[in-house]
Amino acid sequence: MKIDVHFHALGNGSDIESVETDIFFRATDNNHWFTRILYNLVEEDLIKLEADLNNDGKISTLEYFELTYRLLRDSEELDAIVLLALDGVYSPRTGVLDEKRTDLWVSNRFLYRKIKELNERLRKEGKTEKRFFLGASINPNRKDWQFELEFAINQLEAVLIKLIPSAQHIHLMDERHREFYRTLTRYNIPLLCHVGPEYSFAEGIRNRRLDDFRFLEKPLKEGVTVIAAHCATPVFPLIDKNYLKEFYIFMKEANGGGKINLWGDTSALSLSTRTPLLPQILEIIPQNWLIHGSDFPIPIDGWAHLPWVTFDITPQEYLYIVKTKNPLDRDVRIKRAHGFIDSILTNAEKVLRLPAF
Image (cartoon, rainbow, N blue to C red; front, side, top):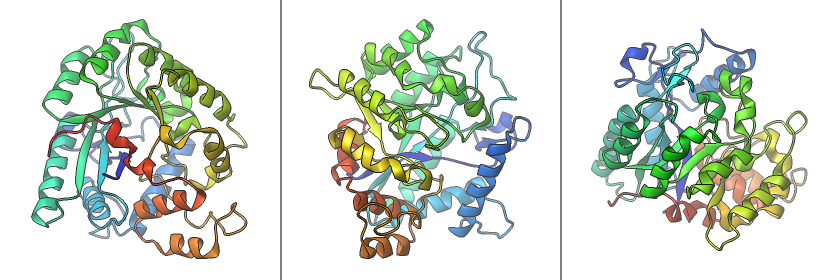
């Protein structure tokens, strides 16, 4: 099964009390100049993808899920998508929800119900080879993390747990999270964790020190299988420090016993700013340690991968890429043209806690 493990669920609900019936998104009280620009760019990109069904210039939660459904249904490259939830920000000290700093909250329960609806639609349309999965998110700072984590695993069929340490105020090395990691290990469910610079959330920009890949040492030590998002690469190589060689050494040590305990995902590697890093990634990191992800709706730039200019991409490959309308297929074809092998699309089956279907 060819799986995208890194696809964000988004919406525009404005009432945090209704988080179980809609996706909450409100950044106006906690914004940053960069995130304001990014959110506008993402919305413009979604409009270009014809997500704005009522032509009001905004993308509602329902419209976003309609686009999501269409992208997987029509994909020629993918069989499944892991839709990612995102838990709120909880105080590491008190375990209480911090409403002001919670800019996006995608409830596990809400997303599970949407996934069931989408999968039923696929079944009715005869697309039985296609499937959406839940990537749940539980902030270990919250007081009831154990109940929420076990509920997501046992009742909501979560295939992984997603964390963004900076955006969610999580210090991975905190000793209080040991039982959280041990629970992940007991249920054999992987942790998809953002590492490296985070520019999608104001809190991510402010707390970037929490996204150090070396902090993954703690969950790895407790036996958790970890997927490091974006292979810990910089977003802007001229500004962000490139730790790729150090990340490889860290991966090599984690995977030294024969079992792959630390994976890297390829999400957002098609971003134009990361294009110069692709040869280095391919040279340094073994592809049997990689898992495919898109990071949608972060833009998937086809135009930037120019023939001859961008390494060894041919004019034929370039035309194929820029003519590909489905951004998920475009992402796969960009990576393939650069030299990523197709097995990264199926490696997720070795890692995810897939339900029977």
